[in-house]
Image (cartoon, rainbow, N blue to C red; front, side):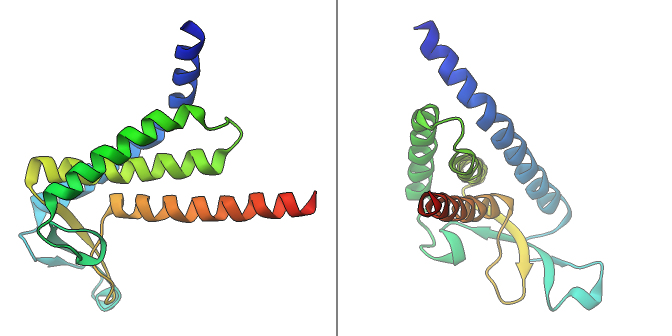
Length: 164
C-alpha cells in the first residue's frame, strides 16, 4: 500500500505543478479579459498588429473552432471524464516517457481550465484572436500543445526504434 502511494505521489509530482500553474495562468488571463473588456469588445494596444492579433472578450458554449455551440453540459461531462482518466492512468506511465507525461499534463490543464469556466460561468471565455482563426484561450492552447507534444514524442520514439 505504501509503495503504491509513493508511486502515485512521485508521478503526480511531475504533473500537478505543471497543470496547476497552467490552470492558474489560464484563469488569471480570462479574469483580466472579463474585468477589462465588455463582451465582444476588442483591445489592441498596437494598432499595426490589429489585422493579425487582437484581444477580444468572447464566450463559447461549444468546442474548438466554435463547433457544437450550446452543448456546454456535454463538454463538462467530457472534461470530468478526461481529467479522471488522466489522473488514473498517469502513474502507469514510465517516468522516462517525458513526452507522454508532458502531453497528458498539458491536456489535463486545458480540460480543467475550460471546465472551471463552464461550471462557474456556463461558457468558456476565449480572448486570443489571430487573423481569421477562431478565438481561443490558454486552456485551448494547452490542449493543442499537448497533442503536438504527443505526436512529436511518438515520432521521436519511432525514429529511435528504427535506429536500433
